[in-house]
Image 1 (spheres, rainbow, N blue to C red):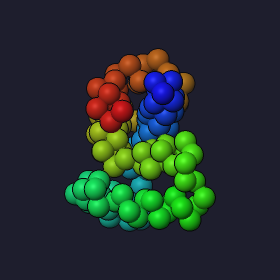
Image 2: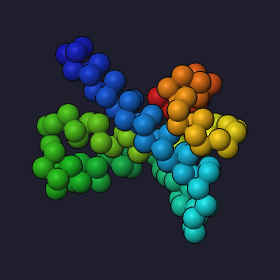
Image 3: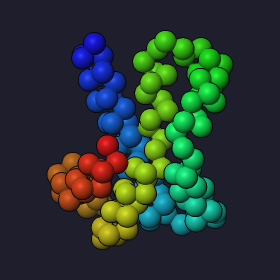
Image 4: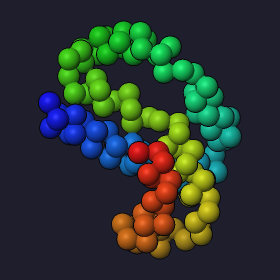
Length: 121
């Protein structure tokens, strides 16, 4: 049982960090129409208690035939608004040097973003 829990926790955290980093970069650096409205929509989801989402998530997983699978535990956790909020705040603080960001992401930027990643993960 511990191995299953550990595997689900590691996979969902890794996917959360990946999707949060990509979304945070888009919200922080790319200009597109409706960016602020979409971000406010993400933040509005933080006000919805998780208990309210249990039945709709069950219905959604049943419709997708994901009942009793690992995917039903992982998929709902990879779209956290909190992860995008903390990662976006970090992406805004990083200098706007796209080549440097992509070439040294694994070393410098993840090292300096540990606080936001630890908070969201």
